[in-house]
Each structure stands twice: as C-alpha cells, then as structure tokens.
Length: 186
Image 1 (cartoon, rainbow, N blue to C red):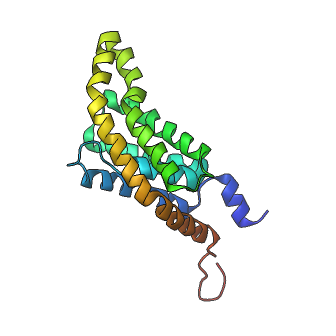
Image 2: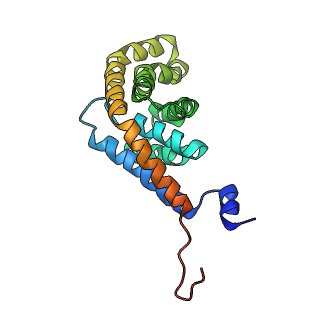
Image 3: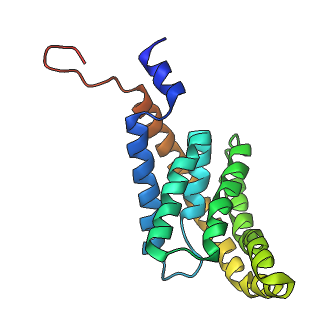
C-alpha cells in the first residue's frame, strides 16, 4: 500500500491537522469580529463549506471552533447546543453537496438560522421544563429571524466562490508531494 493511501485510511495527515485547526480558528475569529451584529455570523457558512468539501472530516474544524467558543465564553447550557447543532447543519449540507445553485445554499443556510432556536430548545425543555423551554424559544424568534436573513445573504454571496477556493486548496494540499531533502530523499 502506498504512503498516501495508508495515511488517508489511518487518520489525518499533518497538513490536514494544520488546515482544520486554522479553519476552525478563522471561523471563531470571524464570528468574534462580527459580534456587534446580533446573530449575523459566518459560522453557518463555514460549517456548510466544511461538510461539502471535507465530508466526515468536517467535524475537526467544527469542533476546533466549538472548543474555542468554550474557552472564551465558558460552559453553560448553550454549550450543550453547540455540541450537536453544528453537526445537524453539516449533515444537511453534506446531503445537499451536489447542489450548485447559490440560491439553494442561501435557502439552506437561512432555514437553519430560522430554526436555530427551535433546534436548541430541547436543552431548555429538558433542563427547565415546558414553560421555560417555550418562553426561551419564543424569545429567540426575533434573533432567529435576524439569523435567517444574515445567513441567507452571506451564503448567497459567498458560498459558491468560497467552495471553489476551499476545494482547490484541499485538492492541491492532498496532492502535494512530500518535501525532499538536499540529497533527493524524503
């Protein structure tokens, strides 16, 4: 078995570890940079891109991002949501990976933003009871509407061009030959 095939089956290549760490960190930095805009963030876009380009390996940059959230903001009930919410979006994006129309990606991302509070609500129903869960969910509706609009616009404009760039980068990175030493051997 060749070296590349063995590395592919065994786990992550060092270049993938670096790439996924950087992408998770960039996702976090972009969200922090846009924090002034309530519920308008690039995370949904990035999660969809990770799922489409990296397949099941998307969990690595996603959970780098989640870990950074936990480190900066601490742990609370919302932390439970972050353990599953992004994987739901990644799964939906992966199922739609053949889609090429920017409008389709914008609709998926907007729908996820609109349903964000609904998808997070089970944690609040379980921890606080029916009344707390319903109150929490209803109070989130205005934020979910903003999230929907922001996600829609960001995905409409950026998904297709960023997908091309990320696919090219990943394809080139995976096809790169190992560095050689001065004597021509690696």
